[in-house]
Length: 227
Ligand SMILES: Nc1nc2c(ncn2[C@@H]2O[C@H](COP(=O)(O)OP(=O)(O)OP(=O)(O)O)[C@@H](O)[C@H]2O)c(=O)[nH]1
Ligand SMILES: [Mg+2]
Image (cartoon, rainbow, N blue to C red; front, side, top):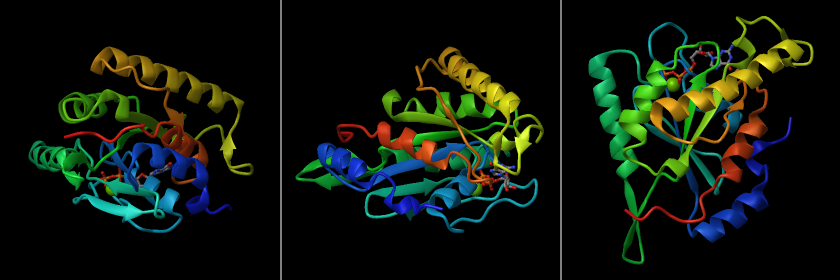
């Protein structure tokens, strides 16, 4: 397997040079169990964060993890577990979205992009909409919001995933394409944002992780966020 730490390094470097600061800071957000920590581990190619093993939510703190000098990922607690915890987690996420660093006397936002991870094995988008409309959209520019659909292998209850080639068969591929279109449309209707079409991937099976990185790299902003 290729080392993701070198993936499109020159492209990232060139884009960050235009933006004027590095590393690129990408915050992973999503409902509990959507697979944020799994995705982080899959990109870093090591067990950097603990993945949930039961029905209980796992991640409780925001933590940062560097892939290399150019890209830093932020793992966050998932929403949708309990009202009290959701309040606390939302507050902490919003604080982080407002965190700033100083450069030549101007304050710039620390987080450059957010990646909203949707559980592809579920139809329920309620927590994702809540997260978008209450936490994310009011606190960061819409152009900095990306979405991706994880658990592609489980999207049809685990059927049509070909273990031999570690990829979806034709039926599941068609299903995933429809799902991406539908989520793009529903997010536009529910949260009023014109998101880029989500990428489908599987953190657990390490499928389409480079496409997920392409989504991030191709959407690196050209400017820092002035706070
Ligand atoms: N089959 C499959 N399972 C996955 C995938 N991604 C995550 N999982 C499983 O889903 C469960 C939750 O994954 P986590 O990565 O802990 O989810 P999380 O979003 O970090 O959850 P919180 O920390 O509670 O917010 C674990 O049992 C993972 O093994 C995937 O792509 N495919
Ligand atoms: Mg987690």
